[in-house]
Length: 78
Image 1 (cartoon, one colour):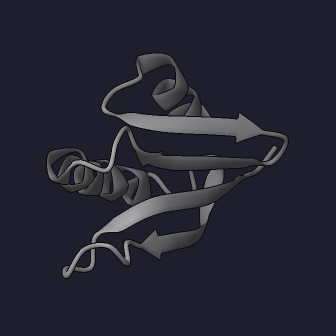
Image 2 (cartoon, helix red, strand yellow):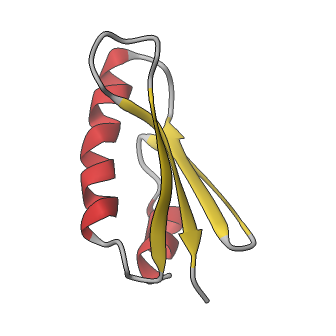
């Protein structure tokens, strides 16, 4: 849970919502630059998977020709 807590506290160019047992992350806007920088955050999240959470689902943007993820949902382990 520590990594997710750090994301909540540090903020950045993304939005995160956390509730009981789950968190969702998305880019701060639909601008290309925000969506592309969100991909780097996804890499960091995936590197820390197992640090109190696991990736439940990701969603690839249907508005872009590339396979950029615009939503990531993780389950939080207590």
